[in-house]
Length: 353
Image 1 (cartoon, rainbow, N blue to C red):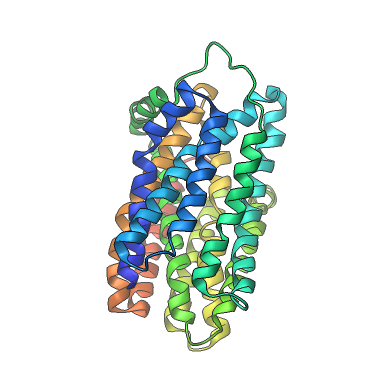
Image 2: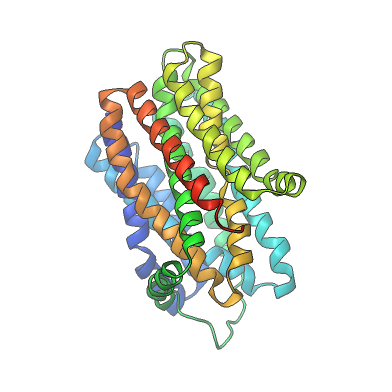
């Protein structure tokens, strides 16, 4: 496939996952969250098993649809079932652990994939991705769902209310608009490096090393996201962290575009991915401090949905540009990100964070 087709598939996946939030939420509402997780794992198994069968674009779209269905079925149901199974005073401890395990999986996955490519073909490695999903299916069957409280709110109803409440909130809070836009824009542009860095490195490193490179970038992301609060405490300025983390991500695109040496290209990849995609928890802390408890989940969901829409639009545009020139695309993304970070930093200085 061309790069434009690859990123068009990512837009298709994002759009499917977004639109399937409502019908999959009905399953969790009417039947059970345990059933939703069972079906999520089953669709993941089907998606990974289907993907390598027919090497055609239309077939890949079916595979992405199956995977997006699995993601939508698991979305919300995992944390909801976890929260139903524990006391409220345990939320602050357990939920961060769930996120940490997710990041650990993201780090281990590419590493294992790169190792497996030494013994198996890419198609066989794709099939092997069904194994973790199959294990997840077995775990889902073993779950016990506690009785629900009578005041549980329908996930479907909440989906529609999110748009209305979120829109009304951001209309009246300019600083929150800027923060949400900054978080979505930098992370969205940084994610483009996830799909494009392999095209830059192709021919410079063995394919089996791609997994190590991606895992290293995720490790840097984990280190950075756990350092921001400490840095803010020492430096006393959240504005500086927001500005410099965005700036470093932009610099990463410039290095990947113009650096002739492999180690400088890798530095660019690490800065764009490891720093650019590490900021979400730091922004979440700011949002949680500024937003009342009653609105918190709704506002954060609005930000997540807006980010999905942004990615769905950005992916095919970047893919088309990348087919024209990878280096040129990196320069455009870096320049656009640099201009935005400068504007955002200037505007955010007027607000108390």
